[in-house]
Image (cartoon, rainbow, N blue to C red; front, side, top):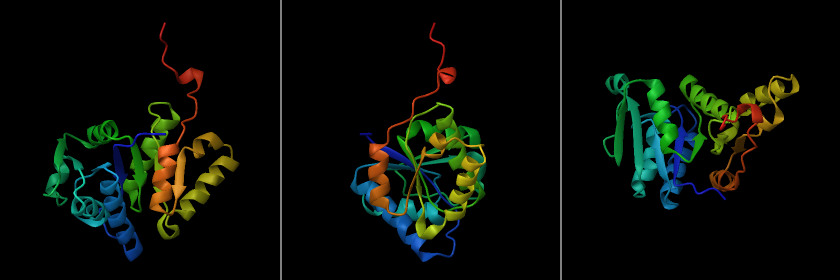
Length: 196
């Protein structure tokens, strides 16, 4: 059983047009706070990002925002955070979010959200971490993406074991439970650091 004391949430800086996504984002923040799991996220008070933070803050949860300095000028930074960490660039931001988190959950979003998801799952595939990675598939938002990943498996570009690194659920409680029960696959010998 994984001890999840902090979860990083990747999601959109826009709200989109599905009210269910907004509601689920609020609920996720709320449930993380209720389970005493700190929220690590991109620090904005706008979009789905802001809704997750709002849900956690309203329930007295710990919320850590990580944002690169240049985005502070463009995004509206949430002023109610437990902690705000400013980085020099996007790469440093992702490294910091990874370091602060015991697991990751992706909600609906755009290019940036997908980029964060695929980088963190690639790191897992390469054995750089063994943390659970969840995808909350609200209202079938990620159905087409999952079909694409299944096609990658069928076409021989993605191993089934690596596809299964992604924990997919449409229910928050089930997703969190599966993340707590997640058992990482063995890192291939060729990827293990040489300790001789």
